[in-house]
Image (cartoon, rainbow, N blue to C red):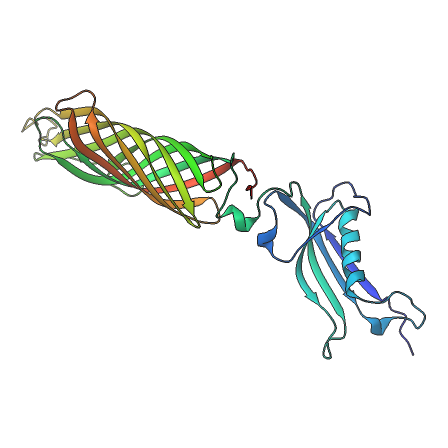
Length: 318
């Protein structure tokens, strides 16, 4: 006895729906998620099971590869999808005499946008990124006037900038930010009680701007350019209090130093496929604008945690 079960079983699970497409519209087929253009939306899933063993004797519809994919494309068009991502496809074998197709239904908004595989390595000329970063670990080397050289390290800072791709693998970066030598790796306040002993505190900070040209190579980028910095140094004295809260030992006055400098800026980043990147920024300065001598070396070296936000994507030009 021949079963009257249908030749093909189709299941569509919808997450979102757009106006249906014309049946002669093109549907792109992807077998790897890295091939998909980045400007797309997932609309649902289609599952197709088909077996010629279930066909009626006079049924002209047969299970074959072309009919399976035509059915999947038709179901995609019905909910406004113009692409399919194949997650599983099986053809009949001795042990499994059936067809099986599982696919995600996609709505691709811009087929010219780069795929995920390219977005991690190459962008097109004209692409813009907003960059937010935290100079997390900072090492200062400053040379205050009539003072010993200062070498101090600490945590925290903030910076914001923009990246503009003027070539497929090269971009200009302009960045502005601040860095400090806070003594804790987490941003929390600390209440301290000082006794009769005078405690010396060295505080370093820097406001900076930089312009660099950067070269991308796979998951790395390297940059070079110019920087302007306004550096601050302060030697603060705390303590000297007796039990009654009055001074037992009067601390000396704070020492302060500020300079405005011009110098260079070098960057190196490890880039992930997502928005995060980890890098090192080296800002050596040589020309001091408001102090003498005019030429003196100082630097700020930072371990930078950065995130990019895509403002505009342009397809890579071949």
